[in-house]
Image (cartoon, rainbow, N blue to C red; front, side, top):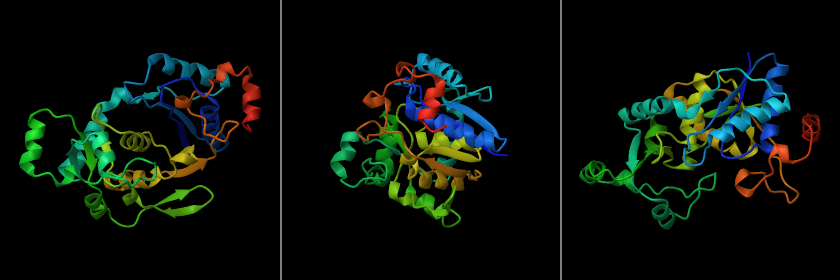
Length: 271
């Protein structure tokens, strides 16, 4: 049975891009007689708001989308993610990183596939005594995956199955030593989303084309943790009149402010 999910972050009102993603996932599940889940990805407690979570529920109901309950809310499961970090650390695959964003920007000009500065491995090479002293002093730190060690622990070459394209080779090394535990919470997007897809039994991950590169890293985490790999279907992005991807951070208009009915929104998006 196909299980899909729509997993927004409650940092603002849903826009047309969100509506497309939700309708796309729901249609794939419905046409296959499968399950459609909603997940609230609110690990960023500095930006996420309860009122936006409530608005997500209201907007999806307004669009006529029905999802299973109870809904998984990530902020209620920090202990789950911390447990994964503990397992990776016990295998020597994580290390604490005390660098600031400014430190990394000064030290690296290379970029990861998602546009972030490629971490140069500064804290991976810290002497054990220096690392212990920083931890004892309570210095803020993230936890990074030791990419070389992780690849060595991986059973073989990685690939993912993309709907309509078949098996695609994965190259997670392009991300370098990625953060899996943030300084402000015990998980990153990559860890939380991969963990939750696995434990919720998601068999088809539908998401925007902009997240396609992240699939390489997610397949590595799945292999390391023994999580079953889902299939993937990356869909087109909804853009504004200038061709830019709709995003909350750039002020994309909320669904209820467009003056359109749910039927008109569905038609405009091709549903």
